[in-house]
Image (cartoon, rainbow, N blue to C red; front, side, top):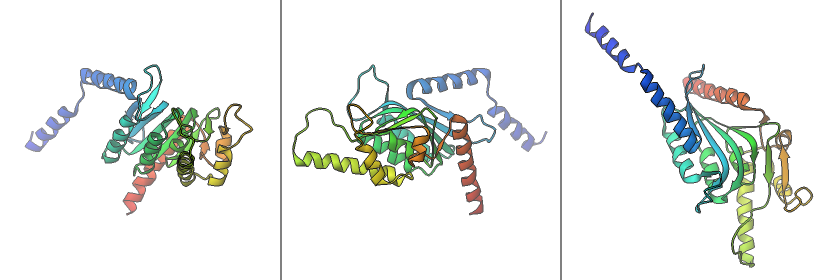
Length: 250
């Protein structure tokens, strides 16, 4: 056997994974899902390396929520998105959403970061994507909602002591304008229509706003299509292929 053949054999042997190593890898994956709802997906027939990011429960901001609450911590999500952007391996991102909303500043920060990723992104609304969850749902390159999924658009709320002065109302309006502008910039919905739905008094019994279910969210231009996990994966693989083809042509 020549030196080259010996070198190839040695390299092949080094890349083999033992059953013990595979068990450790699976255990690490399970722990990652348990801790953060995040997972790298590599075992697909298209040979694409994808990343699954789930945004579940309430978006936790600068203040910690109750230990009984299901939360997504923005200080965990932002570094992960930065890692994804900088990664040579990861080719696309699937974002699963089932959130009641939460901290506006933190939600917008996550949405802006998702929108600025150079990797193809697809979102899927399962259950609901309410309040600040709406900007998160529309921040990707393409978005899906399941037929029973809901999206709630309502005015910005604030807890705690609120000073009843003009600057306070101006701040609320500025915050709402930021949200409306982001949604309109990343979907087919118009700002005027979004504001109309936000201030709707005829749907929610104890609040202003509008509930959009499944197909209605598509009709209003917020979401691209009704679909589930199968459609979301198909679209993401398609976007990854398109990007690879564009690179080859360039």
